[in-house]
Length: 367
Image 1 (cartoon, rainbow, N blue to C red):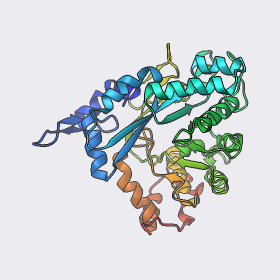
Image 2 (cartoon, rainbow, N blue to C red; image 1 turned 180 degrees about the vertical axis):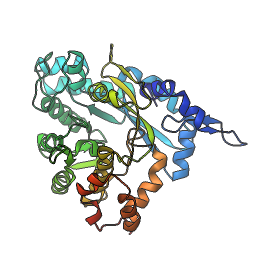
Image 3 (tube, rainbow, N blue to C red; image 1 turned 30 degrees about the vertical axis):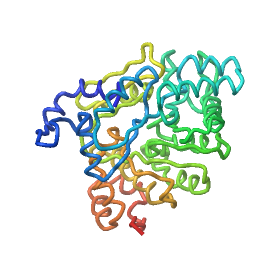
Image 4 (spheres, one colour; image 1 turned 90 degrees about the vertical axis):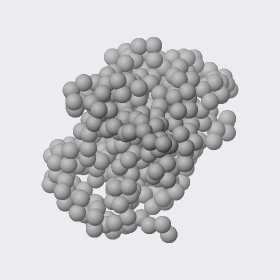
């Protein structure tokens, strides 16, 4: 729900023509898949057995309309996380070295006003830096406008949620999403919170190394080892599945970088008067493409290498990696090694050579 999804619906009328759902005595009509209409979001999640879902990235200015839209989603409980970390008001407070209490008051007011469960940081400081023509921003690189680093934003907001006793820890979409070598940044982010609770979201997109002839390789083993050792960290994977989808993100920096790969060739990036940003890029993941194949394998490696199933959550970062309706197949990939290896044999051959997936014997079960 919210601004990004509605823009994606407008951008992709062909998806809604392709996926049509008729009404019945008890169900409303609808359309769409990655940008499914509101009523059928509830129907489809309920069919999968889910009872509660969260919209993970709502701008404060969009919170009212997002909540109104979510009221149309039947059968399941709904909630939101509000996006902070790129809004000028907060960045000015940090720039002025305001005390933690003043920042806590602002964060508390945002949570109360937007009726959200917690706070999500998307590319801390990076979306704001993009507005001033910075095209990348690493964890310890300064935002040229405010002269502060993503590390400082992350640490301050992490402490704020602990001080406020928020029910959910800081929800982090880190720096350098999708950039080869970004696993090094992800490891630094874990160190940055110094043992405090943190949830790392869609970590598949943050688990890339830059080894090999193509300078793109799996960093899943390094990140899994780090998460296994740090009990303060929870995560979700953001598994990609091979299909047409649409990516929707507040991270205009990464979405602008990816717009060249749009399929079909149309996209939206908007950040005028935004507290963060908005990027919509249609995307088709292909099993014969080296990068896409390795992304698929990296996600499964993370699922199988992170030991504690209560600290790693099954997601496709809907709709960015795939529509959530792909969950049954994803669950089968995790529970059935022979099926997983058969699917692995179909992907790009170079990607197969770059992955340890076929060597992993673990199978998820219900016991």
